[in-house]
Structures are given as structure tokens and as C-alpha cells.
Image: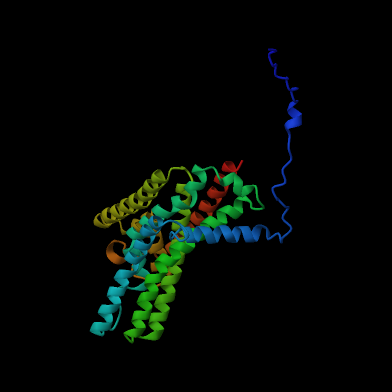
Amino acid sequence: MAAEHPVPTPATAPGDQTRIHNIGYRSYDGPRLGRAYARLSLYSQSLRGAYGLGRSAKSKVLPMLLFVVMCVPAAIMVAVAVATKAKELPVDYTRYAIIMQAVISLYVASQAPQSVSRDLRFKTVPLYFSRPIETADYVRAKFAALASALFVLTAAPLLVLYIGALLAKLDLTDQTKGFAQGLVSVALLSLLFAGIGLVIASVTPRRGFGIAAVIAVLTISYGAVSTLQAIADVQGSGGSIAWIGLFSPITLIDGVQSAFLGANSSFPGGVGPSDTEGVVYVLVGLGLIAACYGLLVRRYKKVGL
């Protein structure tokens, strides 16, 4: 019986196996919204992320908890003022943020790294700049988003105090003036803290390191300045107290509002900077904000290469 031999099939060249599949991709023919829309979208996303909106439930816990912690003391003060028919609020509008500065610092430390560290860690910054968005657009959006989130955090308890003062039938003119002064103060505080927090957080892609660094800078600077001011007061060097206050963000804001917003100073002796020294405080504060913006732009120009 004859054996059957398989017929060899001719080898096919690699090019013969090429196939073109139409999977339905089409070119985009809709409107091109440009840089302004991209910047606004990045701002909106970053602002929502600062309170955990659009993210997991775990991400909402800390920012929402800190927001509640900021507002609860104000609500208690309002309740006491209404119940006792007090003639004035227990705390001035300009003093509230200074008293609650530890909560504000913790919020900055937790949310500044969240805003920028993930982009650095996952190397997504160059992807942003591959679109019609430039380095300055990215920095402005992140800066404005964190400053807005801080303003919401610090202005909300002032609004609670203001509404409570009106319910307690306190003088409308005085309360409106104090409320406006408080808003100006926390607006400057929000810009300054946002800039400092973002600059520190942009140095490292590790969120934990960023949190620790922000807390260290804000806490240590305030503790060191307060200690030096107390020593100067004890030694009778009252003239140096105001100048020492330039070296901490909290005391810097305290000096500005005590010089120009009629606030009571928390400096030793209760004496804030003079008008001339207050001008220096304002210039230093605005200079720090501008310096933080410039440092962020330079940082992200290098990262985006």
C-alpha cells in the first residue's frame, strides 16, 4: 500500500499577512475650544478634587471633616450670642482664621500634594502640555483652584458668624464692615498659603513627603517666630517684634490685617505693626505670592520638557 505524503504548502511572505481593519475611528470635526476652555476645565477639576468631589468616598473624608471643624466653632459662637443676647460676637471676623490656623495648615498640607504630586508621580504633566495649554496655564489653574478651595474653607465660617450676628440683631453696619474686612484677610491668606503649599508639594512626587514638608514649614515657622517675638518682648525689644513677624505666613497675615483692617494683633503686647511697617508687610506678602507663582512656572517648564 502506497504511503500518503502531505503536500507542502508554500510559505507566505510576511507582507501577505498584513490586514487593514476599519474600526470606526473618525477625525474630530467639532468646535475647537482652545486654551481658555482647557484652563477652565483644569481649574474646575482641581477645585472639585480639593474637596474629594468626583473621587472616591475615602478622598472626601479629610477635606470635608476639616471644613466641618472650621465651621462648628463659628456655629457654637453664634448659638451662644443668640441665646445670651450678646452685644457683640465673641471673636472678630479678622481673628477667626488666625485662631484656626492649625486646621488651615492641615488642609493645605493634605490638598496641595493631592493637586500636583500625582501628576508628577504618574508623569502626566507632559501630556497636559501636548495640548493647547502652556506651562503658565497649568500653574494658574492649579494655583487658582487651591486658593479658591482655601477661600471657601476660611470664608464659610465667617459667613456663619455674619448670619448669626444678624439673627442676634447686632448692628448691621458694624457687622457688614467686619465681615468685609474678614473676607479681604482670608483672601490674602488663601493666596499666600496656596502658593507656599504648591511650591513645596511640587518638589517631590511622593504625597507623604509633601504633606510632611508643608506641615513642617508652616508649623515650625509660626512656632519659631512666636517664640522669638515673646523673647523680644520680655527683653524689652518691642521695636523688633513687628519685623520678626515677617518670617511666618500666619504672623504676616496678622500684621497686614492689624495694620490696615482694624484687627487686634496677636503679637506680644497686642501691638501690631505701624502703618509704615504695614506697608512692608503688604509688599512682602504680595512678593511672596508672586515669587511662588514664578517658582512654579520655572519648575513645570523643566518637568514638561
